[in-house]
Image (tube, rainbow, N blue to C red; front, side, top):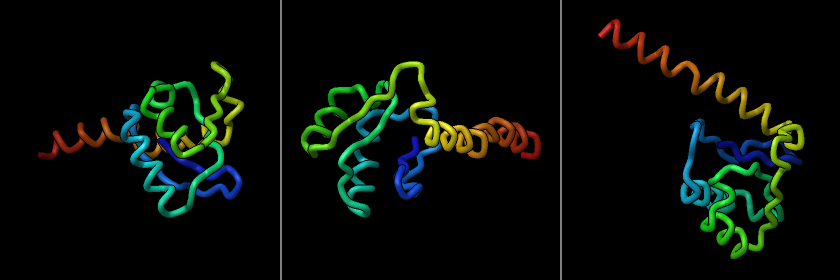
Length: 106
């Protein structure tokens, strides 16, 4: 998960994982809010972490507008999708190779 300020192109938070529960998303967003302030809107895909009751309740309590991208249209959020792809390639894909490497030398 990556939180990017679309206007300033600033990475507020990065969590290079394939899956993240909504409670953790909320915690990470709250940490970002403490530093950078409350956003008016958050653009998200339709993943379960963003469609969960806990996430939607949190956004409503904070008066943050949640904009869901159209299902099957990642081009609506091309900047973050590109950023996510680079993060996966650089941070997550090497992990199995590293595990194999270390099991050989240990």
